[in-house]
Amino acid sequence: GDGVKGTVNYLEPEPYTIYNSGIHIINSQGKYVGRFGKKAKEITLQDQIVFALLEDIGLTTDQEVEDLFNPQTGSLATDDVADPEIGSGTVDNLLFYLRTLKAPTRRNETDADVISGEALFEQIGCIKCHIPSITTAKSDIEVLSEVEIHPYTDLLLHDMGTVLDDGFPEGNAKGSQWRTPPLWGLGLAAESQGGTMYLLHHGQASDVNDVMSYHLGGEANSAASGYFELSSSEKDQIIKFLMSL
Image (cartoon, rainbow, N blue to C red; front, side, top):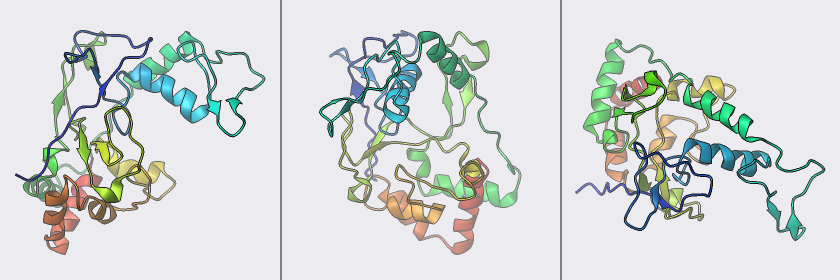
C-alpha cells in the first residue's frame, strides 16, 4: 500500500477525566482514545486545558494542585501564590469558551484555482490523513450536536519519519508520531502569527513547500512525493486551496 496506517493513542484517564459514553471510546484494557494535543495525549478538552495551564503557564488548578517539579532546584517550582491558583469555575468557563469558538470560515471557495487545488489535494492522497469532513458526537450544546464539520484531520497518530522525530514519546505515541493537525484556519495562520507562518510542531516551516519537504520519509511520503511531481502551477493551486481553509 501507500504506508498510511493511522493509530490511536490509548491513555489512562486522569482522576478528573469526565467520561461521556456518547463520545469516549475505551479499549478492553480500560484505556481511552486520546484526541487533543499534538500527539493526542489528552482525552478530553478539559484535560487539555488543565494540562496547558500547568505545563505551559505554570498555573495549578483544582484538578492539578501541585506546582511542577523543577529538576534544577530539586523541588517543586513553588511561588508565593496559594495553590490551587485556578478554580474549577474558571476551568469550566475556559472549557465553554473553547467549545463554542466558531470554526474558521472558508474564503474564495468558488475560485477556479481553489477548486482545482482541492481536486489535486485529493488526487495525491493528502485526504487519507487530512480527512475533509467528520460528524460530531451528540452534545448538550444543540448547535454542536451531530453536525458535519470540515477540520481536515482524522485525529489519528501517524509516523512521520526521522526528520520529524522529536525524541519525546507521549503515551503510546513515539517521538516520530504526530496527530494529524486540522487544516481549517491555515489560511489565517500568517495573520494570527505576526505576518509569518510558523508551521509543524516546531514552527520551522514557513510555507507549504517547506511543510511538504518535512513530509518526505514517513507515512506521508507518497503524498509528499506526488506533490513535488506536480507542475509549479498545480502546486500553486494546492496552496491556494489550503489558504482558503
